[in-house]
Image 1 (spheres, rainbow, N blue to C red):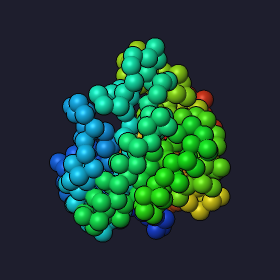
Image 2: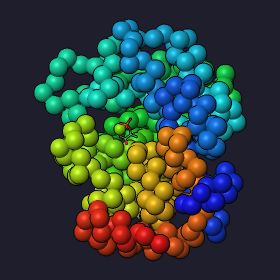
Image 3: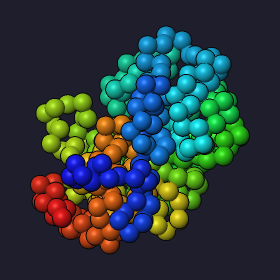
Length: 309
Ligand code: PEP
Ligand code: MG
């Protein structure tokens, strides 16, 4: 987008012909949340709660968690926010949750998997989130990280509803979940795609390893084809499917994601305005043609070239 377009963004995520694609912020602290609000984010698409506890040696109490979450959510009173339950393990170990050394931590007991053995930790977090929803006045939804199957999604949604939280969703960041997006959307209220992990697991390429970074390119046609399945599932069910991985921060890819049927994009604060302005520069039909052209290619460079205006 040009500088003039950036200045012109009116703060509502939509294509030039009025198709809504909400532009949200990714946050992990009160400072991030303030930055996202100042940048014009319409809400929060990913609150990484584990960022509050990277240095904690013991599980924080419900009251401590409630206060910490309220501090992050307060700039979004009356706005939609998606709080992610603790995504401990692999690149983000938490001292009070992460298992003993595993041979392959990225494939081990991480994310929601931790909660199957220790559901009481999840239930305490949900209680704290429900309290923070009241205290902050934000419209809170909750989602789980690292969900692989429909059964796991249904298990999580039931616990969220039992905690009195109205909206339960899951992240799609494991290829098996992308392949079952339709069936998962039947048991939850929304999904959100974590393209960082979805790329890592799709290409079997460690997201922290520079030597394989080329594979983890969000323009890889193989990844775009999985994203299409998720967009199709959103259209078929009428339920929201967002993207909250790094891919959502690329203004041109934002048009492709819109064309694939994704319904919200969540990113770090500095990218909010350029993505909002990019969306306003194209019609939905143009986004759909860009998506079709990118999907028909065989490598990321060709996909990028195909999605040029
Ligand atoms: C992702 O995997 O894309 C994601 C948004 O979650 P995180 O980066 O916290 O793993
Ligand atoms: Mg992830």
